[in-house]
Amino acid sequence: MAQDAVESLDVAGGSNLGGDPFTPAAGSALWRKHFLIGAATASYQIEGAVNEDGRLPSIWDTFSATPGKVLHGDTGEHACDHYHRWESDVELLASLNFEAYRLSIAWPRVMDEAGRPNRKGLDFYKRLLGKLKDKGLQTFATLYHWDLPQHLEDRGGWLNRDIVYRFADYADLMSRELAGHVDAWMTLNEPWCSAFLGYGNGHHAPGRANLRYAVQAMHHLLLAHGEALAVLRENDPASKKGIVANVGRGTANTQSAADTHAAHLFEVQHNAWILDPLLKGTYPADLWTLWPGAEPLVLDGDMQTIGAPLDFLGINYYFRTNVESDGANGYIEVPLAGVERTQMGWEVYPDGLRDLLTGFHRNYRALPPIYITENGMASDDKVDNGHVDDAQRIAFLKRHLAAVDEAIAQGVDVRGYFVWSLLDNFEWAYGYERRFGVVHVDYRTQQRTVKRSAQLISKFLQERAARA
Ligand code: IFM
Image (cartoon, rainbow, N blue to C red; front, side, top):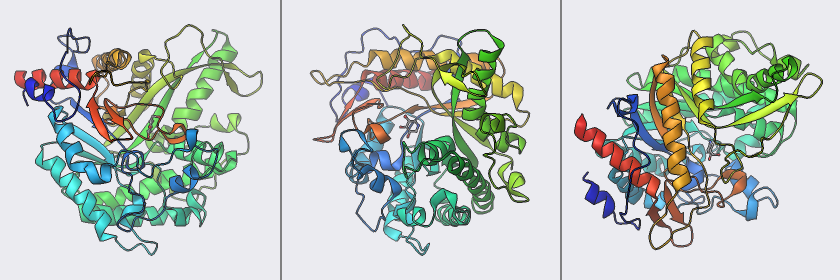
């Protein structure tokens, strides 16, 4: 699509690109056409329509309706109204020259309590994925981005081993119904968040807080992933299959052996807890020095199922955490002063993405090709005379893409990058206040306004396509 079309989108946004602080350096691997660039969203964060067409309640409906759980009492009831506006949202996505779209499927929309298909919900995703393919976009679909059906939580949720088999049934239905519509399946988004925030400290739905719960929930999440992977392979052999992990960079506050070990433990807790079982078939032993006696119940064969080979690994990266030893077997966070931070309070630290990628490349012999399935930042963006100048985001994205480029130059097989997020949306416990989109959403009118970051990404992708 021509740049003038970007500038005349049927949404507010305007032109006024001025100089270009985004375009990657000449010679960067990002100029290669086969390095995929897309945008990502998730069902509960954008769809709204929580009571329509047979959708069942999810744990996030329950949690967000509980006073005190979400900032300002926000809920996903209307969100970005994407369930009704999906066609114009896909037009917008394609008009911005994105080459791929990562979405998630709402489990409570597509299956009833007895595990039978909900045709209306399934049709929504068929239409959406069909239109994305018609527009030439590659489709990346996540099966579980945190909106567990409430009736399953009522039976123990991720603490009840039975959920592993319910998840495999769900994967079976989706891959039979949607085979051919999906280029890449991701079983889970960020099991660390589901397990630790959902069951460990209760900051996320379902809001349970017990470390032993978190550890057992993680085991069931990873096992559900492994069982679903086999089902996806059987039903939809042509697609790629993977999982998405959020990873964190931990750095030591001093060079002392104790602080260096503390930073190591931070990364064990945030990264190796998930990646070791997936890529080595074992939990990291250091996890149990951090959390003595918290080992999950593991049955024969579980670790083989969890460690089945992946076609790709999705990596979500946002920030680093500076830590020191707690004087015992753990670590404590030591926030650095004078560093750049986002609206979330997260430090902007692009080197962390490069260092994690090169570290994974060194440490995991079974590391599959990688997609950066999320990276982005929240800022308090305002529409000013039809424009949103999100200068901090533009610099953030450029610097993180440069970090990916450096990792590729050091031999890491990174195949693509998805900005989080296409739209401002429901940021979980922070509600609508934190804006991660490259497109601004006015939640009162549902007006979409293309931010300057999206204009510049679009311009780069257009130039890249023209050179190919
Ligand atoms: O909005 C979330 C997303 O749902 C999962 N990864 C992190 C994002 C920003 O917090």
